[in-house]
View 1: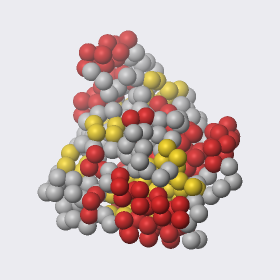
View 2: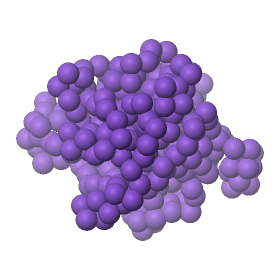
View 3: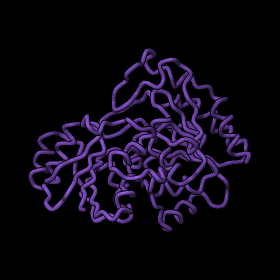
View 4: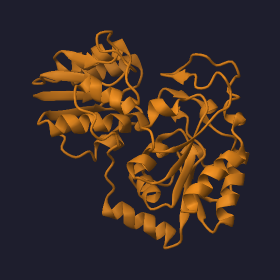
Length: 314
């Protein structure tokens, strides 16, 4: 069967769909992925795909309509839309030229299974055998990371995040001055510290005691850096999912988002907010927020350094 799998954004969310797409490929289906700019780095290196179609989504409606008319496909037997928007699901079916399965429709339902990777497997109708994200790292990327770090042990930090093509959610960020204290703790333990993130986060990291690599690495190079680290520590973000893909021990902070919805149990060491309304955020909506983002500030520095010390002392 020829299948068009649709996941246009964002990077971390695309990684969560990779176990489902792996299951489709392993079942003998010929799979093409319809990607967007933010998810394209995941699918360009994904093994076993028949092809990758790069769309501009998400973007303005006129731009998307023009692209869609010019790029409608033929020959697909089924489309699978990994998302919760009915409009996007119907668009996926139009592009594929066939019927579409989507978590946006009531007969399938989105979010019925936790974590999200298992839910995507359910929607794709494949067995959830291994929920670890798939993101192969090349030898060239590992070599570049080694040229940066050398033989010294190090910790990779992601103090930013919360930004994707549709929105900016600063409520997912822990105060940067607290990250400074955690980095100082790692330095005292004899570990070099690196910060990764987008180009727009470079100035945000500028006062931190670390080697600031924000905006200087590709996603593949970031993955290689994390893969070679003694530990990862960061907010709920794309780099955190890369840590899971790389099997690097990770301390991940959660305020408005739910660790059980995003990560399989045991894959990260979560630090969660101590406010009654947390978690409250899902699919761009704050459903129960009563504290205007105070959840992340409820996380104490000692909680994070304690989790990190458990990893670094092993």
